[in-house]
Image 1 (tube, rainbow, N blue to C red):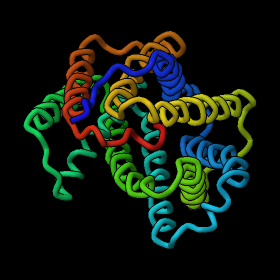
Image 2: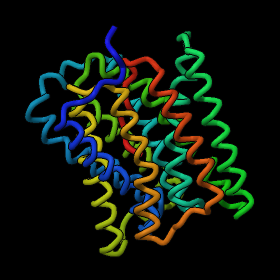
Image 3: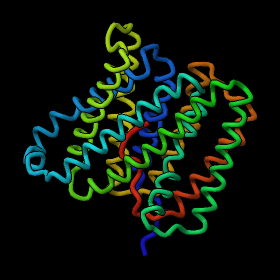
Length: 302
């Protein structure tokens, strides 16, 4: 039996370090951007899809034209779930801190395990223990947030809901990725996400233009760093590094985003919040470490 945790090649450790640093900028840049949250989510999806369209058109056209109806349905469903994830995750940073929102949205592997269990998968006792530890961490974090500012609880719940939706997205995405390349899948999923978010923005009359140059730069930076650089590198190292290692590396986004937000935005988390984040971190790490080594990392960024 192949070990789920083996030392990756040195170059993969370098790529993972760059990827985690890039992904860690996501929460702080969203928090720093004054544009409407749903508009940020929309443009991130649209720009992400537009950036990959030339690659798919040039190298994956035959695959694109040969996709079955079933594959199209799955990819469009994944895109709708991705749009729902963005519609919850990005606005959550308007209500709670970067540290809290990033930590809570990182619970995605827990919900993925619970979804797998609902579908009939066997869950090891140590994984259940990890879930229990992580959920205690969630209770500590949300309880402290509620005592600091009741509005924070809204952001906490939105971040948790975003994690659940992302777990559903990964479940669907794993089915698609059995037969469809990453480039084709992500292009269509991002495009479907953008269309979904466009309908929401139009229905709620969310402004989509007229932002300051600084906000446009932050939206572009979010797309280039967190989406195209960070998650492209993670997909790249999966060829030679186990999903367990990459998933554990992604967890480092929590302290990374917290540190960036503290230095850049002055969002220093209360000391009382640290034990909850540590419990959450340990619990999720147990879930990933002891879980099925075939389980893929998240297919879409936070």
